[in-house]
Length: 235
Image (cartoon, rainbow, N blue to C red):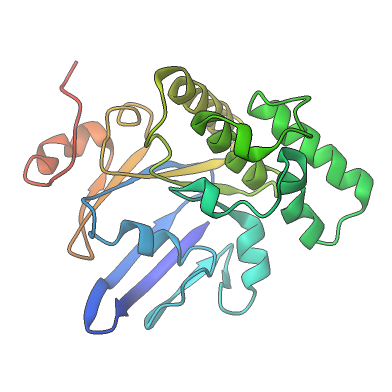
């Protein structure tokens, strides 16, 4: 469980999050929506200690992130909007292995995790390929595999569909469905709800650093009309 308690965060005089509180239960498919600058990316970076709040605190499984950031980053995997900015190795296998290696795991365990993670995103047998030769969709899947190799309880994806072609988007969505069905919590950060509206258990929309909407997607659809968020039409 991720618990956010009264978190405020700013950059200089610009307050990006203002007294935000929420709880993300284990296994929930949560969509965190909002326009650019609404604070959604800043918020999720607090979930595993990539940012520290100016006020308030974040707990993962009951432990303050500030007290044990390594445990938080193990429990909450993060896939960034531009995955190429997060790659640390030249080849697929070496990059996916980076997280487990930093946990101090034995090599057989690392190899098992890498193999399972790559198989899970449809990249089995491609450990030795260079990342810079992959398509955008394949790079997104490598980034997801790197997070999966940590076996997190929650997987956070920041605008995961930006720049992906249709086959790549379908592939990523299918993998998220599988993860959710298997009990992994999925948190998708986006301004475009078309791919995830019907998949989400819950939708939170931020506006000016505050929670403007929080509820089941179908129940809060009308509340989204005044926000700069792309919402699919009713079926």
